Image 1 (cartoon, rainbow, N blue to C red):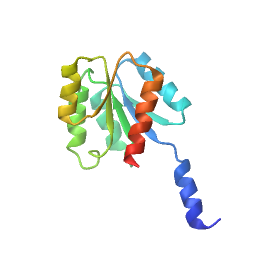
Image 2: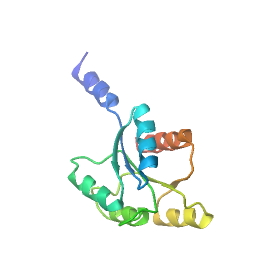
Image 3: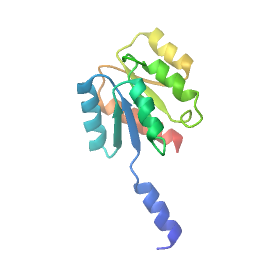
Image 4: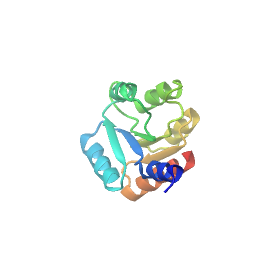
Length: 139
């Protein structure tokens, strides 16, 4: 096998990294288990502030961020604003996962620039499908 084919094979075998920001430990655990069972590497934070600290310590950006909106310290909207204003993070796809489910809530997220939104409660397959679609958009 030549070196180029070997490198392509190795790159394709790397699992996507999904960063999940969720303040409810039970929801966070369930998402993490689901994603890991579907071959994703999962990193977690329970607040937007913690997420920024973890992201700042990473050498590379995650492939996707899934974030709740209503969280203590720094909510999902504030997290998105910090991420979108930083050249290191502005290109990371983000999807909101939130109990805020009114059309106005969803519209506000779209105005900010977050185009993907899943309301709680959610079905695992819907979250997995949305993640896969977002990752394929980036490729």
